Image (cartoon, rainbow, N blue to C red; front, side, top):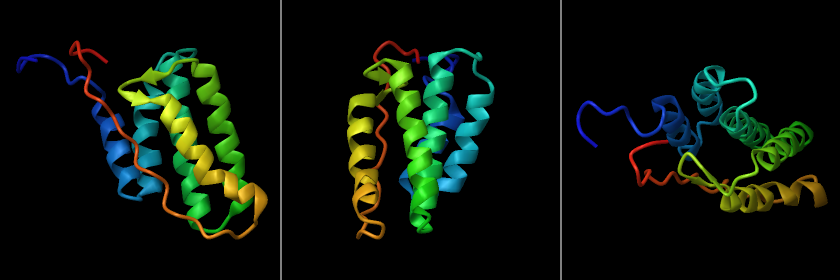
Amino acid sequence: MDKTSPPPYPAAYLEGVHLFNSGRYYEAHEALEQVWRGCAKESRERLFYQALIQIAAACLHRERGRWRPALLQYGRAVEKLDRVAATELLGMDLVTLRSEIHATFAPLTADPQPPLPAPPPWHVTPPRDGGG
């Protein structure tokens, strides 16, 4: 990638991932919302960003002990990821993401106050071809 090439992924997306991985779920939500707003209405990228926003919101609710809103946002995120219909998008392995968020939120369906580990970090792989 030369110095005139655009960044491989939107900066707000990468910032959102960083904020999520730092446990700053509200700020991650806000950063991801910036890039979501710029997407074409029916694009799979828009669905993907919306799913990430909802995962961040679910984690914030979970952190605050608000199980019902956490599960509601989690369910909405899964529905969006299913509609994306891809195994990878913008450097993120969606199969792993689905598995990890299920492991993060499934305990809430069985026990209203389970001991909860922190959500696993999101991983973004740099593009191979220099594009997103």
